[in-house]
Amino acid sequence: MKKYKLQRLVPYVLISGLALSSCAQQSECALPARHIHLYTKPIDQGVIIEKYVDSEDLTRGDYNWQKDTIEITKTDEELFRLLGNNDLFSAYNNWQYLKYEMAHHHDFMEFYYHYTTTRIVTTTDSKGKTHTKLVTDTHSGWTDNPSYMHNTGRLRIGHHRYYAYRVNFTNNGFQLEKSKLVDDIREVMEEYPYVRENGNEVVYKEYEVRKEQLPYLKLQDIDPFTGPDLSNDSPSLNQSLNLGV
Image (cartoon, rainbow, N blue to C red; front, side, top):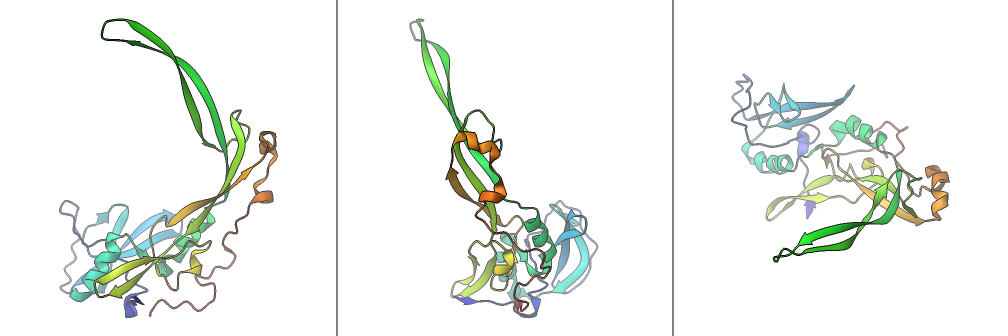
């Protein structure tokens, strides 16, 4: 499959759905040409997500309609629909959001607990005779409390990794290809220029120690993962980002 590039539209076209809502309040836009509108979603002070949508709804979920437009052709719609149906938008145009996401994802420790409890269960059969029995319940899972009395000594470190998408053109039309998981989204942004909100997965590394050691362990002493270097404010690690412009 060859990589499909959007020519001049790549840095601007950030589509999220083509279907119009019949019940949402509409804008008064009267542009005759086929076009898409900018929609924005505030994330935090100074941080927003931007994407272009084929809609005149004043709101679409958490996104708000803006006057900014881009003209499109009818033949573009298949590609735009693919992006929209998968909630994808331009990574490069939303670098501040991606940086914000990475800055707020920190490695963490969790501790596995396991214990059992017993209870008496009383039942009545079809003849009205009462029966009692002792039932054992098992409780297990992960906690962030290293001093929990039922901890076993098993622990894991969680770490966020990120992924993006690119669009390939095949004999069957446009198809999406997902990138590998990376510690810094900039590792794949050049080849995979589309992302979605919360486009990350948590991976884990497990350890086994004595239960008594758990309250004294420090994450920085055993963390095997490397996070992104956000002191570099550029959306490109190699300063040569090319998204098909």
